[in-house]
Image (cartoon, rainbow, N blue to C red; front, side, top):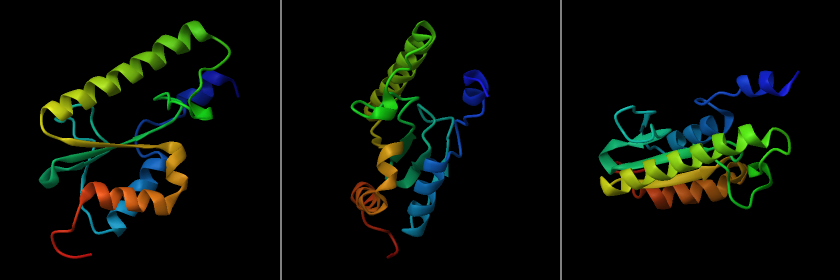
Length: 134
């Protein structure tokens, strides 16, 4: 399979890391909405009442700094570099816009999700106490 076929098969929603985070958040008793188009950046998880959003970023597509998966491909750099830079710029703009609208933003990286207990603690710290006990 060549690279373009492989890249074409990669989804933007309902990825394995996103589904893992969704299951974990749900098991903690939090309720959320998905990919709200009326909120800047179409966050993966939206907590309207808490005014909080979570983005689950793939390390490659969103260029996770310092992560091996976030490095630029060695071939066809003229194509990949501007494409990935646009993704990073779009992420940054969406996060700034959300902050200016009073939203709290959490970004979880694909490589971090493997440490499920750490992610659980981060989510509880970010989302705060349950309205009706967990």
